Image (spheres, rainbow, N blue to C red):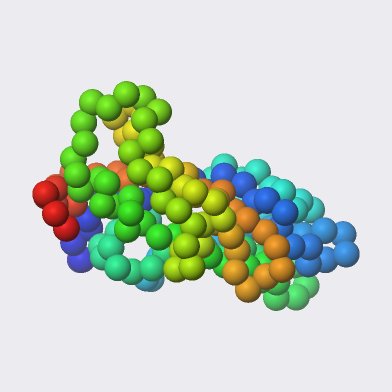
Length: 171
């Protein structure tokens, strides 16, 4: 078995202005893949602004393996239609985790990650300290589609007995 560094909990909050794929509207769901792992949310019927609030948990063995998010429209009789994709960039978040921060005020923004060409952020993303945990909220702009965003929140979970993230002065 590979060494698990930890778990990444991805809360797929909601979709915003998703593309319509059927004349009655779309029935969207989200698939998150990383390496050989594949997780999906439940399907929201006939909704371009679905509220999933589903938590998906990936075990992370390599911080360089991309985490892909794809939105699909569930179809009954034909193959599900693709409604865009994005990549979740966890590197800025991991950098902050490795700093081993402690005892910050609740709601403290530890780092702001700007949208850039090489990430899928639709707007500035905040890495936040709350109740002893560090989370990052992201508005991901979907690629390969005419419109749509997906809001997610990521949170690292240490696994007892795992190697974990080496906390160090520099990466």
